[in-house]
Image (tube, rainbow, N blue to C red; front, side, top):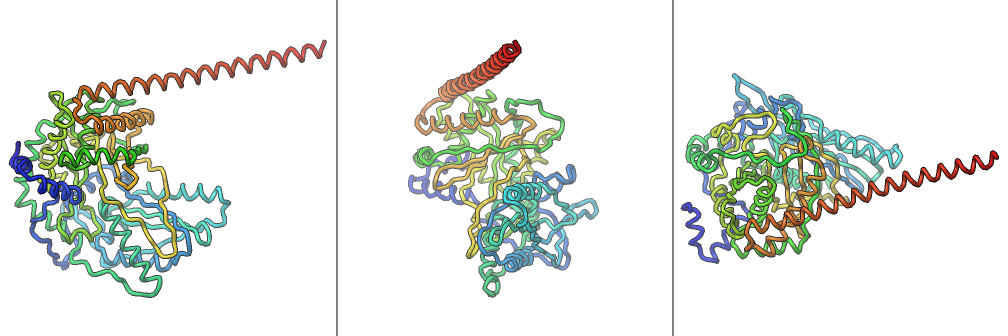
Length: 525
């Protein structure tokens, strides 16, 4: 047991409860860091953050790849002040330097360049003259096209917004950003600021937003300086934790191609509130977080699929550990590599203890940028897979705020996103109604039926561990075997019924033709 785990184990129930609450809210943030200070703006070019460096190199290898586009399409119903909305976007672009940033190369090194100003316009596409059915189809086509339109990191801008007008009081807003300047948290910042600015500008008031104390490039410079003193300490933990890291290769429907195409699809997962409440009762009783329960169950599921006892998955962490970063638009999120040991047939409760220890230590070393970890471990680089992990699990505890504008009703616009970054990603969102998730999967590897089966098996496993957390891993696998067998038999029965129905239809048509032919011959006689 590590020193951190020993201290955790010695905590009183009250202090442990506070720690778990802090982990739920902050995901293990470490707050004692040197402050981020504004940098001189005598020069307008700055180093990239580590996260930006990774995406910049990916873009150099595969220019025009839309897998790292962040798309937020939405419907707006009501009387919209288009001028106020455009003014709101202009103010946000003026306020956040990262939205005026492009990327260049000087002496072989990538740099981010801040434009002093950026002419932002909100184009309006009028679809009112189209018939209703064509209009809706055109909205979906344009939204999908916009989401997959690549960005030029050297030219910019890296934020796009287009307004589609469907009727006098009906619109669709298509908002797209490149991941190199934004993450999920940043989208929330952008939406809140657009809402606050629109409320003010639509009635002729000035911006209500307070001035930002720092900008994203200040964080990028701070991060590079911080790493000079902390890199070795952070690396020592991860090199020990991830030495001889295995490749988790899920059984696939198709062989892996030589290059990664990022082609993918999505499948929904719904875990009802009753199950979610039982899982929360389990995590509270064990003094852990809901994410740890989900990670342990996810590891058990992958163990069943791969028959491996050493399971590696990735996850995201917000990485906004200083208060001044929380109001910024930018790419702060970091990826953690979580390695779960499922050897010696543990009970699920024992597995939870292992996951808790491993996850807490990972949180304590969360600041090492993922690209620095990849460089240090130097795994074999392959163009057909991501380094270190190919399967990812993410739990969103904080919801991205919905855009609320006075006099308007706003809802999300569902479009089919056909790009993915990993073999398999499960992103779960905790809501008052339960857990809602999306499986993102590579269509180069998996058929939809395989993901549906995977999803059902995960739901079965969660229900089982919520009821019988003392069950051994072998017992959980036996349950999955039985349920999977039942699913296979049911699918086979449906298939046989379909074949039988087709044969009956063919026979019925043949009899009908014979009857018609007989009647014709009779008439001739």
